[in-house]
Image 1: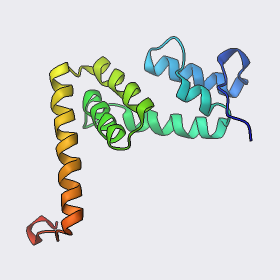
Image 2 (image 1 turned 180 degrees about the horizontal axis):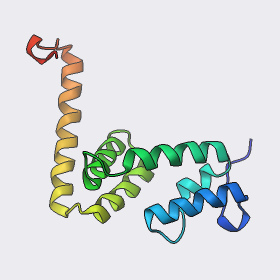
Image 3 (image 1 turned 120 degrees about the vertical axis):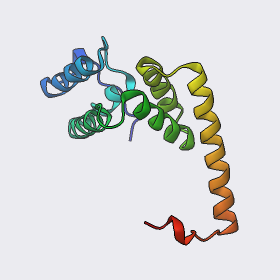
Image 4 (image 1 turned 90 degrees about the horizontal axis):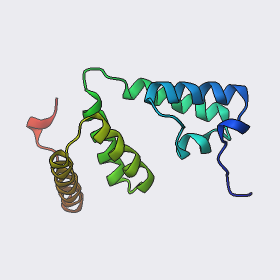
Length: 131
């Protein structure tokens, strides 16, 4: 199998162009980024993923900066360089300050360390934590 290639707007089907147009409108960007361009090689995956991301990342009880920071934290933990870059930019656009980023990185590092300690020591959950 050959390496997947991005689908650019000019070469996209009308179905993909419609999704690209929605992404650009919702995100307020002039062009879709590489993630969406690569997913466009499978229009069903592109559509399903965009609809899910749009729903989950829309403002709700959690504001946009909190959602982007959570996404960034998971991306750091999963070691996804592309997602770290994308959601760092998204979080900054939503209002994350450099100080907030620093605190977030400290929390991510601490959570990963203590999670591994708990797993290594096989610490049972305290009864008071069960809900």
